[in-house]
Amino acid sequence: MSMPAPSILCEAVWVTVDPAASPAVQALVEPLTHLLAAAVARSFGKATGLYTVGASPATQFQYWLGGQFTPTAWTPWTLATICGALPMLTGLPSTDHRYVFFVDPANPTTPPALAGTNVVLDRIVYVTLPPWSLSGGVPHGLGAFLKPGSFAASDPALLAPLYTSFIPSMLVTRPPSFSPSAAVLEQALPWTRPRFDVRPVVDDWPGTAPVPLDERLNRDACNLRFDVAALTQEWQHWTTGVTPAPSFLAAVASSHRRTARRWARAVTNRRVGVCVAGGGASAYRAGPVLREMRRRRIPVDVFAGDSGGALVAGHYCSGGRAAFRRLVRLGPWLSAGLPIVITSTWPAAFATDWLLDGERIESLERRFVPVTTKLDPSGLPAAAVVVNGTVGQGVRASGCLPPSFAPTAQDRVRYTDGSGSAMLPSRILQSYGADVMLACDILPGPKRCNPFDQWWLGRVLHDCTPAGRLIDLWAMLAFFSQRATRAFGEMADAYVRFQPQAIPLFESAEFFAADTIVQSAASEGLMIATQVSNLQTAWHGLW
Image (cartoon, rainbow, N blue to C red):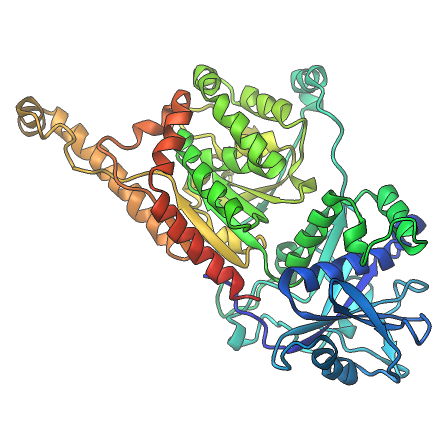
């Protein structure tokens, strides 16, 4: 189910920066605002204005038209006149949603004012650096400048939305390259073993009770891998005419444009999420779905998974299509390594981190949500998400299915297969930033209750021997998995579910057949195309 669109017609958005940030970061507030505003205008075709506090009257207010911001000297400006003028200036319908972005380069932490009065803001985009704690709520009293009740969790018309109007935007960098020898040494010494952090899943969302503020901030938070030094140089070159381009968005590197578009989706609540059920090697079935999404130019902003789904999600979030194709090629090696995880799952995390060059969950731009089941010996079982640690640690914690796999433990707490928390983490995906969702059930159900029924010996085996009980158990488990997963999948805007198999479940251990599994899923291209089209319709419905 997609998030309800806000009913506000014209939004005032202020881009500010953490006062504790370095001068170099604070100086980026103007180029960052240009990037974000242009990305919103270009991506969604909305009437967009940019107001620069302290600029000359001739360039103080600009509106997006023809691929660039065009200045107008119409003054004096108030928020009402700006919102009213945007449709006329841009030629877009007056009933269309529109945005006005505010920035004050000289005083980036001071809320903007028009005609001597502080602007009542609909959204505050807060640029900061990690680590930044969500538990402290909206910092520096900035909440006082937000419109009262703006996207409030208590608003019944919005079904207690999970999003807020304060968007923490973290400037992150790629972690240092992975060192295999250092990783082995850290694991060998108990006091240096790397740790990971989990965040509990709040199970009663969405509902009538207000969502805790820190959970809403966590939902809307986004990571930005802007190269601060390179972006500063690109701004200088563009403003001085060294790099001729109609807009700053067109002047920056392609990686910065991708980041700006992802940021625009986060700020305007248009993020696309994918969740994949657990099922070991069957998770390779997500490949054709991701390929069809790319063909239709539908991004993946948030990717949640259980067990095998987390394995695919972690690789895709870290390296996109190339990482997924490599994971397919490595299928036989994963099968060869299965006996090892009976005694320890650390080698699986080690291999994942080596392949992904030490990528960390908390610094990925594409949000990775590995779901796990927390087993505290002194408490109740709990659903959780690994939010801090290497991607390998997240995959490991999500995929430890007892009794086949050795447990993942930290401080006497064990973390087991994420399917114990959610057969298909669609609801969890929504609480981690997805505004529209595609759910992918990668475990086909049983085609017949007795797969050997077409042979007389199979009928005798089922009807006249104790082996029939095991066949019944297998059919029941496959059917239960299908039914339980469907309950989660039908919450999403698009639900991919594959045709039944003669002998399901066994595929989950067949990593060696990765190519065959992908081809089997691709053979259901019409179903996949239909569901991805449903996702596209829901996503465009937010525009």
